[in-house]
Amino acid sequence: MDKALGFNDIIKKSVLKLSDFSRMSLAEIMIGLIISFLVALFIFYIYKKTFRGVVYSHSYNVSLILMSVITFLIIATISSNITLSLGMVGALSIVRFRTAIKDPMDIVFMFWAISVGISSGAGLYIISIIGSLFIGMILIIMNKLRFQQISFLLIIHHNKSANKLVEEELKNLNYKLKSRTESKNKVELTIEIKLKDNNTSFMEGISSIDGVDNAVLVNYNGDYAA
Image 1 (tube, rainbow, N blue to C red):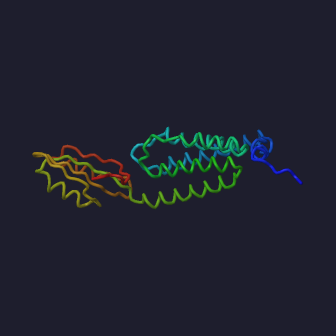
Image 2: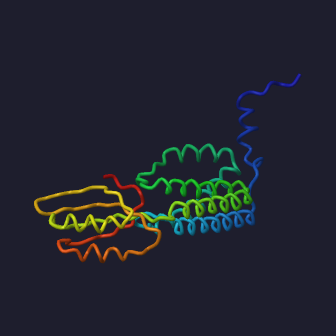
C-alpha cells in the first residue's frame, strides 16, 4: 500500500519545483516587448487624436506606453512561476494611485494600456492587436459623432448699459447661459456655445460693442459646474 502523502510533500511537488513551470525564451520576451510597445504607441496616437480636454498632458500619454510595457514584464514574470505570482500579488496589493483622474476617459485609456500588457504578457498577441484596433476605431467614430458641434465657453465682461446690445448679438448664436455675475455697474456672463466649425468671427461683433470690456472664448469639454 502506497504511503499517504503529507502536506509538506504536496507543497514540494506542486509549488517548490520551480523547473516545472514554463519560462519564456529570449526571443519570446523581445517579441512581447516590441508588440506591447507598438500597440502602446497606437494608444498614444489615439489618445492624442481624440483628446478634447482643456490641457493636454504629454507626460500622462507617455505613461500609457510605459504602463503597457511594465505590465507585460509583470505578467511575463508571474506566468512563469507560481511562487513569484503569489509574491507579486501581495506586493501589488499595496500600490495606490494618488493622482486624481478628472476625465473618465483617462481611466479608460489606463485600463486599455494595462490590458495590452496583460494580453501580450500571456502571449495572446492577436487579441492585443485586433482588440486595440477595434477599440481605436470605436473611439475615433464616437469622437467624430460627439464633436460634430464643438462646445466653447464664452466669457463676457461688460457694463450694465450694454445689456441689450450684448443680448442682441447673442441671439445669432446657439448658446446656453451658464452663469451671470453682477457687481455694481459690471456684469460677467459665462455662456456655452456650440459651433459647427472654428468660425469665431462673431467675437469681433461682441468685442466692438460699446461697454464691453473683453470677451474670452475657451474650449469646453462639458465638465463645467455652474
